[in-house]
Image (cartoon, rainbow, N blue to C red; front, side, top):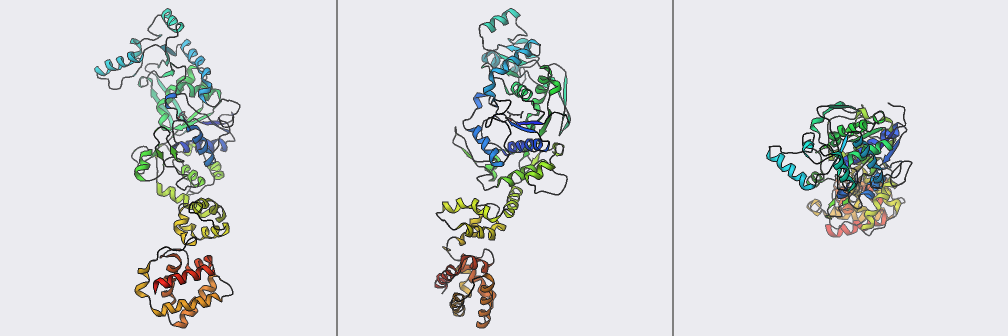
Length: 509
Ligand code: GLU
């Protein structure tokens, strides 16, 4: 590794919600930066004005905040290489485009949209189904390679709309060492003459990403595998701009695949299979379409982050549960796999469950509070914490505390009478009536004393305690579920327990 201070970047385009693959890219950048005592930069790549979506940048920042993966520099807090929004750096890029033209590595292209369309039609008619502006085509188009220098000058002076395109070399091999994939090489003939600077003066992603990685002194560029086909263009630009020795080390992260391993996991798969794919809920301002997020689905950020770390990376041991500090310690980019990582929602839930169980009851109770508030309930915090502690082992999500423990907050509105009635007898009725008197007089109302007195009275009355416990449970919860029944009674307290026995007796009689 170079001696330079490690600087990495996450460079999203603000075009919509953040896919979990994007958050994983953030995470790997973050872990790498922290592991090496380096810096993590957030750069907003908003040069494609047609794809810009209102609110997307704020959403990305909020995601990073929620995950605890905030960048050290970025549009939210500035930094030594500001501005961090490419649209605000617009004036900067043209000089590099011109430098490339002057050095013969790029050229001005004046083709109008109609001319480009006509070229495509001709190519298609000749059997070329995906026509590109490439080394063959550029020789017959209107650009500074085919036009006389004087004419080019006149066109430029007149302000004729034009773009700058890279002049991809013919029959060359471009190769580089990817930190995950090893040696990767491309044939330049397969790559078209990408636009570097658009007619509106904005750079395209290709030019801007190279210029900014250079100016922002980025040492390692980690991004999704979908950017691999663009790598040769970027490598050549680094070289053509004379910055080759400063080029970052690359790593292209594996895709996150559908659960069946068949292709990239998309937001539509989430809708189809019923799980979130975005980090947080995303409401598309154009279509009003809501895409569900992990946050709103009840994931704890620590669990979400831990789960993401294991998608495509492994620590080389059996350990699966990692705090962020442990991840920082253990992370190495070389241990990221080449192959895609299948997304497994059950595993994601398992991670969340592990974190819920580990979390202290008071914190969980706070997280659960909104569910109670929404239901118009305001029990004491210590009571909520106690209940949380009793049911968390059964929960994969915070809101499941309600599903597994609602009866601690409200009386049952229905009883599983079918489970009681067929075996209900006047003796059992009498048992509970007497037991009420016994527990009213109990000096302490603990599950131990409750159980003891319950068993003692049952023995006295010649009924098996086991036959009374299920009815008792149904009296308190309404059904055959919940933690140990005497613990439920202790938690509900004397008055409420007695009240529930009475209410149920009236129904069972
Ligand atoms: N702007 C690109 C994106 O939206 C960044 C790719 C890169 O990291 O080079 O993902």
